[in-house]
Image (cartoon, rainbow, N blue to C red; front, side, top):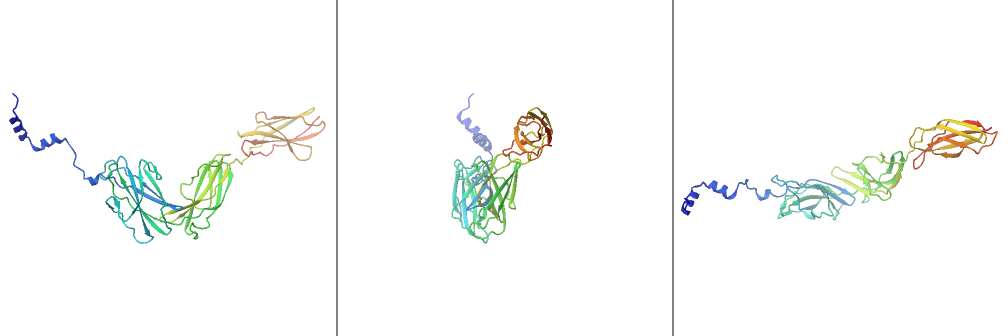
Length: 363
């Protein structure tokens, strides 16, 4: 028997209201307040003075305020406030989508961040806008998601704008075996012409070839005015430069890069001298033979000859495979002295000391 319309209505009225709600809406979690769906703030703000600019970096948020995952940030807004270098810094408060009392100096879109740079979750902006030595600059960042919801301000970053040092002077480089030894003089003054005070450290930069870009090879600025770069390839040109870094408790200030110098590391240790040299005279010739030097980079042997007295002169070079040489430019009834040296394959070849001398008379 099919139920009538009146019977269906009575059945629905008899059902509990909670069951009707479950049937109509499905199972859902508790509602989340809209203000908790905004992105969490950027974190780990850090900054440094670079010549005439301030470099500001931060880490992108990965969650919302309610702890749920934030898939991506659509854009960042970077704010700045200029203050005298004294007193407490003003707090950052968001109102109507802006940080009160701060100037918006950059809008960085995730899909086209330039001139900002993005590496993984790290975002970097270089601020060159009307900076004055002796003032301090307070930065804060907000993040906005793809729906236009803006999170609260990040922690504040306070950077005193210091005068950076001028470039170090007199950089020189001395090559060694798989190394280059650098030395330089401290900068004469700061960029504003004032004398250098406080602690100054140095960043060493290196590039390959005549035009390769320079990059720091000292992860942190070093003390002192010398540095030895080890483990580099022999017979390869490297370019070096140095930057002075003013180190203060609140900030570091890196100055101009020095003029670059080019140097090629080179092997300076010669091979061992050959041993066991023997000379066998015959009519019109003297045949020489010797034991090889043990080093694997020997490229040639040099043969020296002298008369019964007088200086030795090089008369020939031979490939290392033979280790024999026949001197046919001899005069009968004449005494000759011979010695042999080893030469390596470095760009600037190193020659060993000479072997023991043998003396022989041509019949």
